[in-house]
Length: 132
Image 1 (cartoon, rainbow, N blue to C red):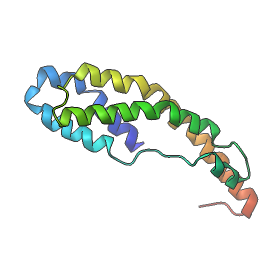
Image 2: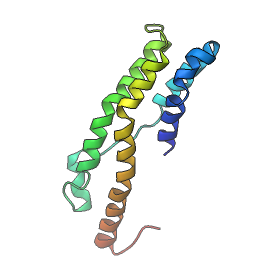
Image 3: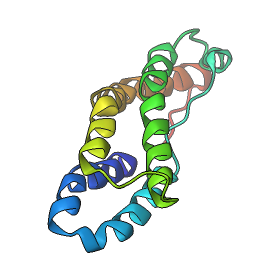
Image 4: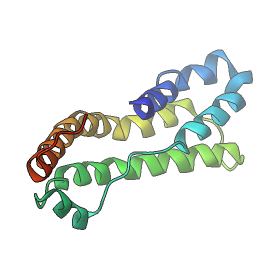
């Protein structure tokens, strides 16, 4: 969830920095860079699904990840381009990039909870023990 909070901390104020606090844009871009480089959600490939004894268990999560991963890359590339002065800061563009993948990211994080529950259930069945 801290990853989602980090993205939200860029998304919510990004337009206002341009108009209300232009002198702080460089600090905001530096902050945004640190968020985009933070540890991101990552997934095992399909071959890892068999470990739980349930082929395809992670398939939905992997599909969702692939659906929002391009947006995360676009965000990272855009922030890096601003930082290196290849592009001018445009809060509306930043807002748009994040808005393009945020619904899928939120859905993914919500639905991932059920996958984790199913993984725990698989572990319990295979070992007879439940993780504490």
